[in-house]
Image 1 (tube, rainbow, N blue to C red):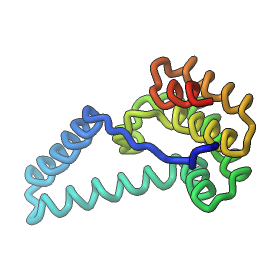
Image 2 (image 1 turned 180 degrees about the horizontal axis):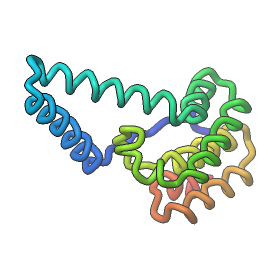
Image 3 (image 1 turned 135 degrees about the vertical axis):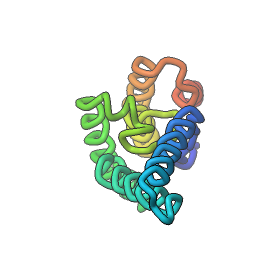
Length: 154
């Protein structure tokens, strides 16, 4: 029996630390500039940057999650493939995602794309392709617990 497709979140606390430092630096910059409301201005800039970067950079990733939640598995599979290719081409964006996309996830976008692709393939009863996808994930990201557990269950 196949399991439902789930989305797992894991947090990188170092990323939260860096983002907090960035927010603190904005706050200090506005205090130094003599602003009347340094906390408000620094929070507005931080939130504007965070939401803009999360919206405009991982476009295919967000589209894949939307399609996955809607049950459009083929479209989601294509979107996650595109997301993987984008972040594979621009690995530095994914590597420094705590600053480039304000992401506090401990999983990279490439890693998530591979896991989601594998789960979709597994859900669609394409077990060999799913297994290959999980193995590719483990090859690129050794020790990924989600892929390890999924391979045991296949």
